[in-house]
Image (cartoon, rainbow, N blue to C red):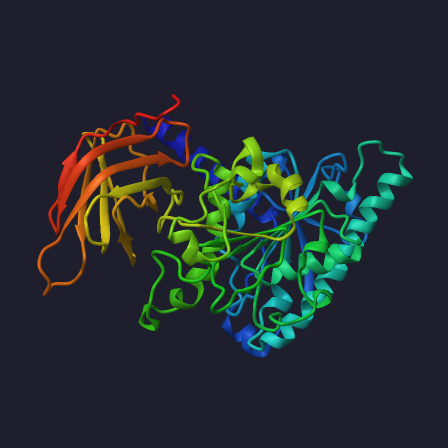
Length: 462
């Protein structure tokens, strides 16, 4: 018994030593701190290289001779992951998970562009200037990739169209500067909440713009603070309107999360798209108000493909989005993963003699679980024989919908209780091809739940 215990003990120690040695061999992103930020850092660009063979162990790539690394295969597509401003000097918490998810999806060369020395500085203006230096370094590397492929007659060698740059905050503009250096021939730039300060109002040459790549997709999550408000790409996504994100703190008393949660949400939304299990559909619309009002649910302009999804698979809509020009889209999310919501177009026809203004609460049930939607951003008008269309988005997919509970409210506590007489209500799912559900002849007493079983709509083509 003792000998076995000694054997397993020695084996455990050997494994720990091996893990420690392996960890020492792996390159990590530069880790700095607040004193470094106060003192200021001089820009230094490090390239941490990952493939499926070393997905959890970064290798430092030489700027002078990047091809000395035998794992650098020019026949693979290449993705650059570029972080933004680092006021505290710490590495991004999402960095290595991002690399892992990218490599699960595709066989790639992944470069984490570590410019923490240069991004860590209390003086944001100096960091903005450093973005040009980083773009110059990336331009030089890509030029070496192209020239090496040409020199060695590699038929499947590096081409600009196979390069994808994913830039977060300032990293988005670094991607743009790099793409501009190649005349916009880079395949794709994904901008995750591009930085707004010092870039808002600048000409295209001084920021990211659609001409910087063959396809530029942009996500806005903090446009009223750290992010950029206006359109920057072929498609711009405004999550939850592009400003305040659900689940993020609303007061400064929440600490650092108050400042970074909305901005950082862009990364976590994109990470969820890499997983692919819960796609987020985006709807072209002129404003978030119109989107909430249910005025932007028509996806016919995209043909049989339907409205574009947000995230990694947006590239599937590249052809139509480039053709349409700059497209503004909106979607809503849950406050945590899974972020996707499940939407219904709700059409209501009433038969009250007088017009009623009010709000609706709708709950879907399948017998075991339920999901609720509150139409509360504004009061809607319900007028006799006039169809009112609403967008209802639920936090989960309830299937099959066995019962629906409705509640009507006018929010006028000192007025007589109203009744909303519904001639017909129709729920058309937006995320699937399931048949629409209907119900006819309902009476909703104000502030009282009414539960009913939906039936297939009479005019359904299913």
